[in-house]
Length: 379
Ligand SMILES: Nc1nc2c(ncn2[C@@H]2O[C@H](COP(=O)(O)OP(=O)(O)OP(=O)(O)O)[C@@H](O)[C@H]2O)c(=O)[nH]1
Ligand SMILES: [Mg+2]
Image (cartoon, rainbow, N blue to C red; front, side, top):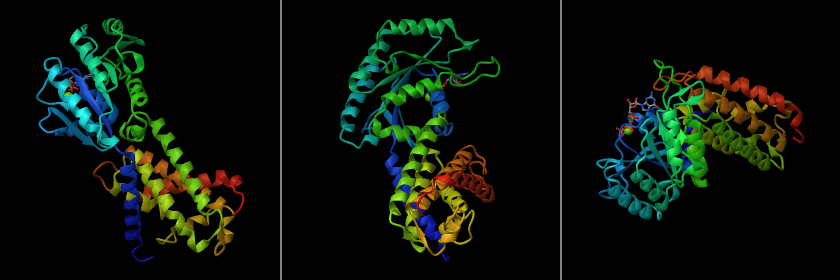
């Protein structure tokens, strides 16, 4: 249809913005002496682009605490004050900031702190223990990370093990109950591997408020299972909504009423995989036109591929077809988003390979419809 792409983009924009607002932001405070590997750790878990940003804004007026917003992640660190030297000032500013933030929406508050100590330092000062206790008192759960810990044959370096033991004798109120030994970056020269990152992330998930879990799922880049689970949850919800919308069968010509449900689902899944709006919109256009020719006929055209539904052209769409269709669309879209996230269809800054998107979508879409053949009841 004329202007079909504009209409589509407009609708998708609405859904995308809504999904973005709903996901919110996970805000992480980073502490630890200079050079221990805070940035390296964050980059390893949240992706390289985090490193290249940098200048945030003070969390409150005149504060040395800076908030840097990078998509679904907010990073707070201290600038102009040094952990270890200026602990008192940092804590008093943080205390004040935490209080002020309590009046703000959850996504504007601070949620978790990572306190980093170099694993080979063999020293953990009383002032560090006091600092961590105070963070918890102020209301920040603390994940204690030992950084740059070498591993050989599955064993941690004894110095790091000893440091962890010393820390444990302090009985600090740590998230996960213990320090986490990590190495954030592999080192081909020494053969050192990255390790421990998933444990840090898991501990963070356990203490992050319920309302920012989705943001954390979307922001982190290492736990693909969590992203996939969230996507499956969204697909199940959308398929159920589509089924409910067509509970009393709707005329085939009105099947477009299911489109917002499907676009909403696609927008939310795109967020999980950090696909930007422009790219997601192009991918969605390529995907939904994959097996059809014209804009609004998208749905009708694809529906013909639902086993049994082809004979219904001009007839009614019921719950079975509506949910099956939405489900298959969701599964195909997840595959497209996963591949987009790994640069399959042309990397960042490169043009989208629409044909490859179409192909990937169609293949998975057909496969899913086929699998669900036996599931359909009433149409
Ligand atoms: N191999 C390896 N090198 C690391 C690791 N973590 C940090 N490094 C190196 O240690 C140096 C300091 O790391 P950063 O991540 O910049 O430390 P930081 O705590 O952010 O430092 P400041 O921002 O200056 O406070 C860099 O040269 C990193 O490459 C790690 O896990 N493995
Ligand atoms: Mg840094």
